[in-house]
Amino acid sequence: MNSKETGISNYLYPTSSVIWTYTLLGGAIGGAVIGFGSVLFEIIFGNSSPMFAMIMGTILFATVGAIIGLVPSILTGWFVSRHRIVIVGVEDYLKLFITGFVMTVLCLMLLITALELQSFIQTYLGTTFNHSNYADTPSGFNSDDILAFLKGALFLGSVGGLSSVVLGKIIVPKVKS
Image 1: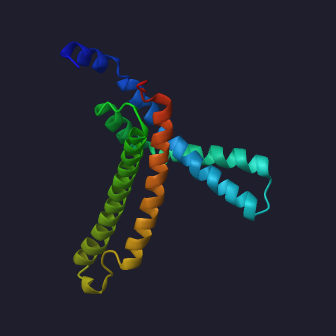
Image 2: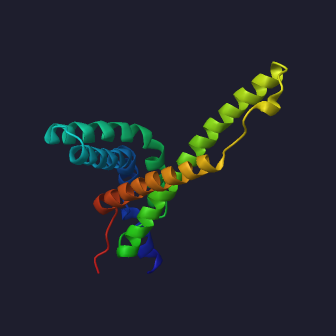
């Protein structure tokens, strides 16, 4: 590809559309996936009204997912557009999945780190200023916490990756062979 073709392909890439679509719909699609799965579980193993539960549960989870998944979806959209990912084959869907997975897990790690830092500051600075013995306070994560984090990261990362693939199927440019 010569420099003229490179300039044209760079100009035609829908950078702002990719970023805005991921931002506005990324978390909502992830929340809808979780909501649909949990409502389906409730219908199979519970005794709720199938149609009403399906609609309301999916809408509720999509709304909550749009709020919670806002930062990971912004980062995913930015990364996809920054690297100008186009869909040529199945391996490009894998790139989208990995991008959504990594961005979601990264945001989860940052959130947990921030919450743990806040807990650390409250625990250790509070006991230091109160002249208490802070050697008696529990510290850090134990193995159960790490296992719970890994399970949560695998689940939420997979939801983020699936959401990224769905949006990639809709908005990311495809190359016809």
